[in-house]
Amino acid sequence: MTDRYAVIGNPIEQSKSPLIHTTFAHVTGQDIEYTKLLAPLEGFAQAVDAFRAAGGRGMNVTAPFKLDAFAYATDLAPSAQMAGAVNAMKFVGDKVYAENFDGVGLVRDLVHNLDCPIQGRRVLILGAGGATRGALLPLLAQAPAEVVIVNRTLAKAQELAELAHQHQTGAVPVRGVGYADVTGAFDLVLNATSASLTAELPPLSESAFASGCLAYDLTYGKGLTPFLKLARQAGVMRLADGVGMLAEQAAEAFEWWRGMRPDTAAVIEKITVPLV
Ligand code: ATR
Image (tube, rainbow, N blue to C red):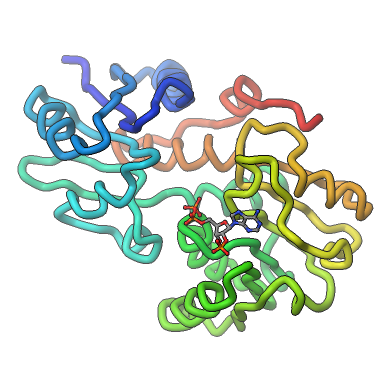
């Protein structure tokens, strides 16, 4: 029997997950059906209950339901606990296993696809919301020299830095600062704010980009965002958006569900929006 999966969100029309997972299933020879599920804003639990009752095996979760999924899960992986949000669920009997693969997907894209080793590098992350929370531990596990979190609301950056210190297994220095207090230049600058969704530019100085730096916008499909334009203006040659992160977090979920890891290159090529 064909195993059923879905991505749940509201809105959901824009989601690339069905295309990604259907391609993965095709190349790995897996017999699955993967659909989009639009749930009412107040109807997450009912929609998931119904999907499970109909034999659904797993789900990806997108906005605005990542916190609902966190509450719905019976077994939260450490990645989901640290992120405070869930982006993938697996249903086994009464159990709802929950993961957050965004951070690990980001790191895999950086290290494997973009050939940007993080070990020993200075890393700057813009924003202190859910995207940064999800990215922190996987980034720290790569042993960068230092991670600086910069945010408009300083207290949130400091809280996240503190949380990272409590949870990381290594001893990477992590600091939370305001935009006026970013000093020195960074080998990797990650925009994990939601500013690119509304074409806004975080107030970052051009001097934050080291020569040879990679500037990475976690947003996907917006072309050359104001952040990436700033980086280019600062002389940064290597620019990337979150397309690879999207494909890699999907590959993580696929492997978790199906026991085999698909290659992501074809999917990335298919869904890339040029950075212009
Ligand atoms: P997400 O889950 O996508 O991370 P979020 O939790 O709402 O969304 O967090 C959004 C992040 O983007 C926050 O760090 C926010 O900064 P504040 O905490 O100071 O609000 C940041 N952000 C949003 N718009 C921004 C802008 N125009 N410039 C700089 N930072 C911005």
